[in-house]
Image (spheres, rainbow, N blue to C red):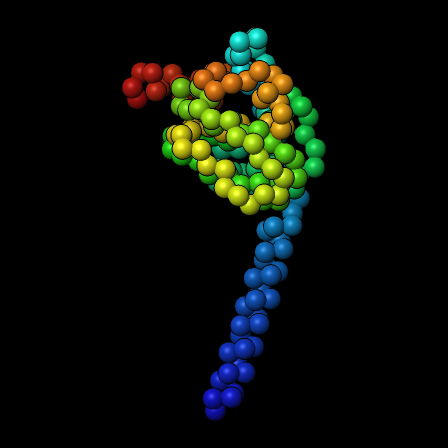
Length: 170
């Protein structure tokens, strides 16, 4: 009886493992998330002038989770803006992300609070100890090349709306 129970348990475990593997493959080995380009450009006010970027907006949990995973290229003047519902410390990883990135953590006032580098396929957590309402992902090296620094302001209708509300105390 014990032997039959053991075999039944082993078969159930193998079936569960097989089901998990199939689900993991559909989740982790997928096509890139391609969001439509936002009609409004994002700009960064730097000491050397305004830098403009076309962006995709990730404003839903499924989009936050996928981000730029599975992409192999991205234009130098393009990025993805993650828009969250509130300001708090954010945590990112580069799992399944082939493009090296600059991650700009932005407060509700639109100002850059931290700039971090993301290494392709790294599972290390990228989590600066700052509150961020937005995170902008750009191709690695773009922040340095464009002269983008901590404390500078990002401008975009979605960011401006939050910044205006926070200034009014809403």
